[in-house]
Image (cartoon, rainbow, N blue to C red; front, side):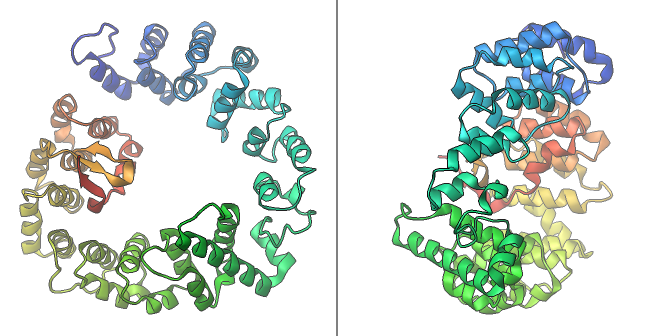
Length: 477
């Protein structure tokens, strides 16, 4: 599977072979890394990094030079630097050939460091380049680099207090703390703000900032929105939720309705969960967002709200409320409106031992609607602990259509039934042959990546898709 000649299906076979490679194949992988083209060597480099290999000096420098000449530092260079040995200065000299704009892209791409030689190389680059007068790089370098501190101090020394200087100095409290107006601009870390302003003044300033932002948003003109101040106020409430109490002041500022950003509703839940759930009235968008947020972290104190939401005629609200009630073994309604909420109710009952409900879940794997089929397969894989329904899940693995798009994943094309089936079959040893066959015939790259991760026993490869919601799926245009 790791040959280099291109024949029909060879590229997919090579990608799968790289994902399944063992340490015994490291010499062959190194050979392929040096001879494959840019479009084909990514999986091989990824396999070498996974196996803890280090590329020979000549191969490493050749690949770095090729990445630089092709301006492909956002992909190939990532993988190559993971395989760097103790030759950071040599690699840095190759990268010195980049123009200033490209240098910025390299460092911004790698600002947060990675393991082994990759981090060491980036550290060398920061030390070589940080004294260039580029405040954008300095902000990403952070206060851990003395050169970054010097650059930011030089750039901001002459700036008057205002939105621009606070945006520049975000992350550099040692440069901000002595500036006049820093506390009122919420430009200091939350606990320092509490010490400077006191709880009452900090509460008032945060409420004022969020209220102003909401008014700007309602006006339809974002030109005058101080985004930094808006995010600073949110940061304070996440670190010090008690500053948002009493909740009535916060709710008056953000004015709960369909246009309220999800992050503000989430913050209100953190500030005073019971008070928010009591306050929510008939606004459908707020109910839907709140039910979805509660489904991720339900608590027994939410039951009254969740019972009401589970009876909603809005399918998404009811579904997420049932999700939360199931997670905390809460009381279930007698019925649910809509096919997806009805399925979710059947799942909850099946998980509590209701055999008739399990039959309903099995029937839903053949439903006419792709979202219902996909969700039924997902849940069947979670409740079929004894493997009694592997045949039904294997059948779903062959379900190719219709192809839809995932609104929560940049509208990527998806075959959700096959994807859910692949994840469910990951724990079933006898299903590996079916997964291997299916790998070469799936219609979407997302499904192929999931199967590859499952076969390679890399749970993280499929993990991003586990948070998937059937309500994020849309028909493909």
